[in-house]
Image (tube, rainbow, N blue to C red; front, top):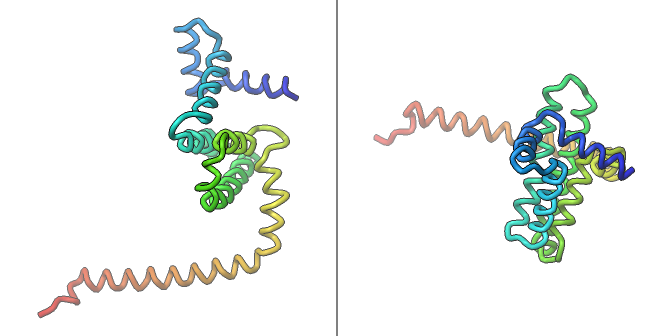
Length: 185
């Protein structure tokens, strides 16, 4: 299993992409293999997550940039399975972000919090059969959604009608003001 992951990671370093192009340039200039350059970059990122200021930003970038790139690729592809994979990731990422917003102020003080968060996000986006997003969605989010779907739809419908009403009122008021019907004489 580890050998498969290593082979997959190495093959990603050679697939045609902006990252592999940059690694090829660095490989040519330094004479070091791109696998070692990538390992060094990952090691530096790990150390920064442990000891650096702004580790939260780096962790959030890792949890966003790779999935966003592959989400755009999935949108542009004709396959449905990659769309489902990345939609599932974004649902799990959203649920995690909401939960984290309530607990982040306390959790961020724990040593290695950002390393753990980063590992969690990497597990959720990993291209493996035991992908975190698939597991969390199928075992936690989907059952919760199915159990409470009717109540959630009622709330969403109610909020949608209220938002539509407010938007109509604001639009009418803005048109009224723009047409000058509200001038004082």
